[in-house]
Image: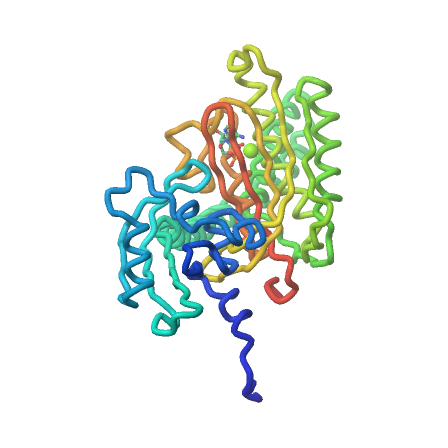
Length: 369
Ligand SMILES: Nc1ncnc2c1ncn2[C@@H]1O[C@H](COP(=O)(O)OP(=O)(O)O)[C@@H](O)[C@H]1O
Ligand SMILES: [Mg+2]
């Protein structure tokens, strides 16, 4: 491969996962890279020229950040702070950061380079990786069990049909019919546990198309009891996906939300049950160690009672259910489909606000063969 002679440094910095912030000698923002935009949830355009201390706003800052920054500017002496708490959109996040000076010995254009590493994100990544591995083991286990259940069922069904024929007595037909219909029920369950056997067929999909499909299915099912709200970013790029599988994922999640709201009517005093379908571009998402610069995000949000606290950590595992008649397979299958698409599902839930977010890559190169 040819070695490029010239590296576009801006591109390089923008592709780094470390958040980089440059400040001028008046301690105003001069530049931030993409990771930094994502960290502070602000665009370069908006942040440019703003005081750096607005971003590095630290509640109860005993350490005088302003003095420390000025000190580095004047002496060139770098410093690092670990586990500093900064506040972004009223939420505390924990970062390690290093401040150093560029051109500090030339009096004209000294710049401060501030490199930030959010600690929370690191924790989240390792948790996710762990989760994905465990999820795959659990999926294999389930598939193995489903196979073992399915094999003898065909034999039982065939033998029962023979038995029914040779008995030729309507009185017994009732019993043989029960055996056959129960066997069929079990076979359907095993099929669900096995998941789709069809290989996904990828095509360019505008996610709003399957979303609208799901919306009308849910609207039909719930009549007007649930208010359906659309909040779409119509400029989203297409994703490469299996359309039918995407519909299954969106439907599994929406049906869960509707069930949670319908089965807990007491929860709604003043409000009406609501299902919000939202689409956005999400910057910098890490899935199984792969960093995606930007992904398509689909939120399915409801204002129901929330995922029961005792299963929130394990909702995506097969057979985990909070409902008496649940199978606990819906979310596990949905997560599996999303993994095949190099995407994932995330869940955050408190009473009154539950969001399942689907992330899908839109670059063709990230999609599995
Ligand atoms: N939007 C939601 N609100 C509250 N609980 C939910 C929601 N989505 C999922 N859950 C919980 O997660 C469980 C697992 O869901 P799922 O895997 O689809 O299995 P099932 O629907 O068969 O129980 C549900 O039983 C329910 O307790
Ligand atoms: Mg379900």
